[in-house]
Amino acid sequence: MITIYGKPDAMCFGCKQTKKAFSAAGVEFEFIDITEPANQAGLEYITEELGYMQAPVVVVSDDDHWSGLDPANIKRVIAHRAAAT
Image (cartoon, rainbow, N blue to C red; front, side, top):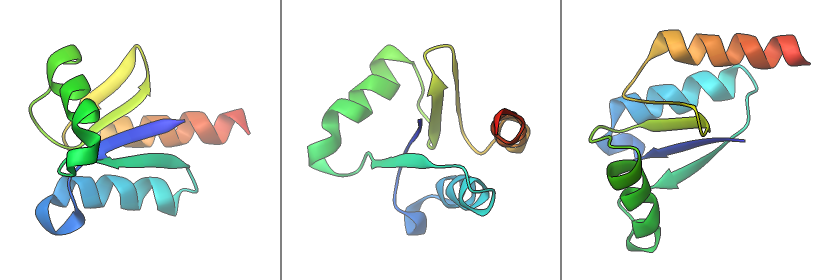
């Protein structure tokens, strides 16, 4: 399962566009709003463990993740998911 750590759409263009691209392609994901106090552990994970400072952070696997709006990586993941089905 892909996890997207980000901010509400009104606060983060990259978050909105990343979610939109995955949704349009039918790729399921979990979205974690890092601005919510209940999600403090998620914020700590992406900043302290992964070292990212920009939203969104997309985690495909332990070894496959990135920060920011990254159309090339989004297309790569969508293509990989399509080929797997």
